[in-house]
Length: 210
Image 1 (cartoon, rainbow, N blue to C red):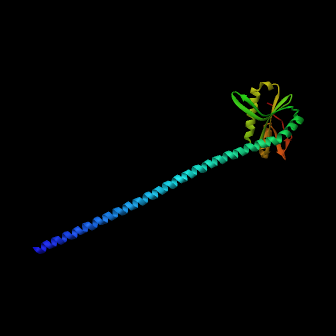
Image 2: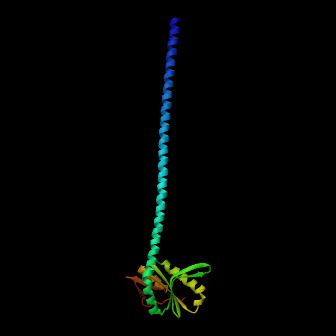
Image 3: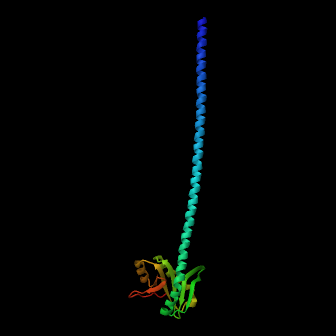
């Protein structure tokens, strides 16, 4: 009987010791889980900060690109203005000599049905008006643009109703194929070289009168 009690006590002590060991391991495991969770949160915070930093850098870079685009556009406009400043004196002489123009208006603005239009240079003789656009780089869409300006000028500037209207485009850089299209449209072309202007009139060229 005494042996049985001792065995039961021994078994209880073993089981109790096992429970205690299991509880200790659970606590240790829980501690490890908490430590791991803490590390994951730290990593997540680092990723979040990195993402926020990258987003900030991206927005800053995008802003810089937009600003650079504005600056490049500004340079293009300044180059166009610079070109006009160089060629205008030569243009005056050319149109005075070839077309007997006596009056000139730089950046001539007029209203067309509520919208404002601007022409780089308007040259006027007793019989004709010449609407002149000055381009750094000539592109085909400049032809249609000038044609629309001429049509609106003809429609809304009644004081010049008795005059013939011609168009002319001046450019520093151009493609010969595009110039051929310009000639086919009946528009004068003037090239710029060494700060001098030269009117190119091919054989059989017929200027269009508006």
